[in-house]
Length: 483
Length: 94
Image 1 (cartoon, rainbow over the protein chains, first blue to last red):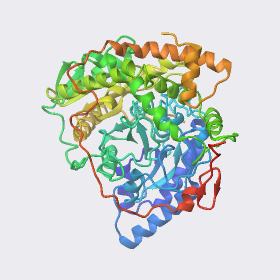
Image 2 (image 1 turned 180 degrees about the horizontal axis):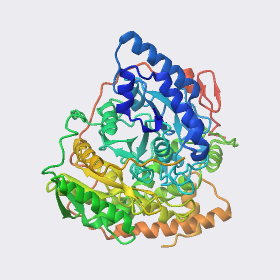
Image 3 (image 1 turned 30 degrees about the horizontal axis):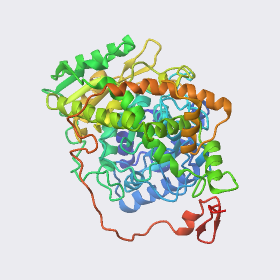
């Protein structure tokens, strides 16, 4: 049995048939981490002791109760901006280097009801600001398909850990594409649920009107299994909506016959790699062959999405990051009065990108500029949201590229604006609050994975899984890096 | 749109961040180019929708009940400076 070939579903079957134990699975995961993490640096913390203890508990429970769930004993990882009681949660920032979480995030609690095994915490761009993990204060993660290239970001550690076969799934966070873009770069499946579908309690906040927890898996089926656990209202996050949670695996094999799929014309802009464009067209053709009705559609305000995002997000960042002041937790630099403690702590603790965004956000929301920037961005947001709602009265799903091109080399996007352009096809969904999933659709001539993104209306994740599963099966890619 | 060194100083102060002269110059340039990019938002004309309120949003209320969570000690332990069950801060009045 090759651990790298396992999925949540296949591992759960092996566990149920007693062909493998939770402790054996955890050991395989740890061995793989020891074997490859020196090359890719996906993990900021490996929970060697805790994972083996948990796996032992799981095996005892399986023997005692004779019962196991979909996630029982499954090795996974969590991005280091998600709180797990007693473990570090650095957000890849010096300012939280010594912080230890005092409670579990709701998503961790939800998973724990089925007793999976947490193998550790993964790398990210500092405070989830970036598209490459190059902004991590603890060094970047490398793309398992090409060690000279980035894994994408900000959840690059989680994506690389799943792609490299270190764990069977990983949690990330997606504010503007931070799950879908690294999933595309690493040749795996990345889901961003609807805003309000899953709790963000215990996630270190970036942009509170945009943030969602996200999931990395090897298959669409596995993605549906995880969302089943995470979805639902949480009294501790008042943005979660009390909508019924459907059985996400129920209709996963029902196919795309008669499904209306829209290709937004605004997403084929100049600068898109012809190989990426060809992969999207090929995916559309496959959908058509399976009976979907594919047509061109329009999201007329798409061109404003990125500018809108890079105003709203920094404004929210400047507010959210004001809590890091050297008083309650994390780094504290001594000063002769309270204000000096603030200035010294924040200047020493934050890296360049958080500082840049705090400054932009402070500017765009300050007296005299808020009307020209923030208010305008909020108006654009409403138009962008309406574009999606309107288009979903005509089609069931959208099919788009996830990124304009494959993974880039370290240092290639050194200009901040160039890096921001990485999010061009993904930010619209966060602005509108709609769900999306990225799945592998091919490889470039250099062997780099290409991702396509499926988008559905608010709370219509079921359609993403049905269409994604059909597409995944018909493309039959099974991308695997050589490490 | 270029922003002036004085504006950089003002925003830095509001942000509770301090910069060296070299950093300030770099930030001035970077912030100007980012603001140039996002300034295209000014073209947006939207008089028909109320941008302040999402029409689908609802207020969610919960009872204000005491529930058990981590101990005060556990939480206070994360604070850089503390005494008994309190977090210590520098004096704000001279």
